[in-house]
Image (cartoon, rainbow, N blue to C red; front, side, top):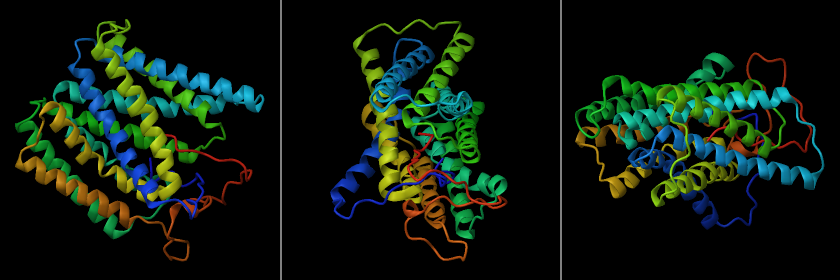
Length: 353
């Protein structure tokens, strides 16, 4: 997701930007990103089919974003949208939003602790680093591999602790968060290999619509066809507001703001903090705490992820470090004949959240 987003260009923060503003963006990003895992737990706790709840969540979010797209199109004039670009973004959304969240939700429903699901999800940038080396020809540094090894060991210890304690989930269910990581990493690679010039609101509409289809299909196939809207109780409405406002729009909005201010590398390091934030949420709201082995494993996972991501700061072709990822324009991947040319006015936002 992060490691494969370098084909996007971002502006440097204005010199007058106050440090307090940067701190607010960083905190908002970590809080809203972790709120998605907490929202999954809230959905599981409700007395309503959780897959249908998620399907209608994405249906409502799609309608809101589509309305935004229509308003922008009326104000800015008609724009030509290539159907193939919409289809490509829909495919990406089905992986990075639909399959990713479906696998995480099913894992939590089976009893995998929310904090552990968040920890495994935070390994996605590390998986992207690995896949980038194999598919896109990017080189990984030895310190990155050390950090990834430590992070994987920490995740393994957390899994052992979780199997003995919190959720009592079956062994196979711990493969679901790994499936989620594979799906979102594959979708991120696809955006890197085939970027589009669609406006942000068009991409969001396509991706959220694809996630809606994924969850309606899952509700029909895995939940005995229960796809009716959830009852409008206080709990279900609060869960929908949480998932749409905080997890979807808040998470994506702060993700974009973080990339604009900090660049890809530092934003990826921020996502390594989300397991700790998720643990705080779940401890306060559900009394869910790991044992000593899980605490040690989560600490190792966080340290390893941060080391690997900080060690992955990009270097120029001559080998010199660049100080700010956000200041860079498009660079060719190894094995390509040259960089892609785009109109100077074209600005692209990240595809995943």
